[in-house]
Image (cartoon, rainbow, N blue to C red):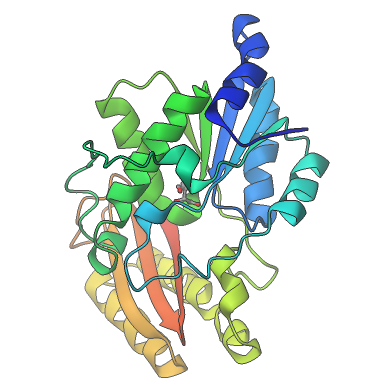
Length: 281
Ligand code: PAF
């Protein structure tokens, strides 16, 4: 496995594969890798000849009071994990490599679907994601890019970006990897105290209860209200509990195929999760 830290170096490493028309898979990450990331690489390996993983903590997607400075940077450990799952190239640029000194005059903004859910609590977050993903796609020029369904809103936004700008790649959503107790794996789970970690699986449990209630025909509005009450009683501070279509349009009533979304805080840690409920008629 090669590690490249410059855009030039990466291009030189990728050129032979590109000329040989090899299929290039790309997994963008911010590092501090866990099984969820490694599963993205495993999926990429199934259909691509060569897999590039980027490790870059992107400053433009963090708000002023968020955890950019404290975000765990664990490149050595990440590199070992990536070598073990057969990653071919790690791209780990410094901030100066990705963002030149002179002020940037270009922004990338996906509208509407960036506004609610995480876009509400994290204004500007998805502009930062759209910008870095566009830059990384231009640098890596992959045939396929792999994103986790845990960040469902991000996945749909990136798919929209790729369609709207005719980017020549396919974005593949990979199912969420969970701990045995159901907690969706996330780099931020490491911030949880022992007590908070014990409570955290209640988010996924509550999504599953909601699914059962929906399948039994209970009203969506009542179910969302109950989820909020139950999670609040357990000690979560709710950011949102919402239902959307898989394209992120608002839904007021259950309509065969929806996604339930939860974002909630336990102490300082913000957790998100979602569950698709698809009841064929
Ligand atoms: O999901 C993430 O880790 C980040 O938002 C991404 C896609 C790597 C962009 O920085």
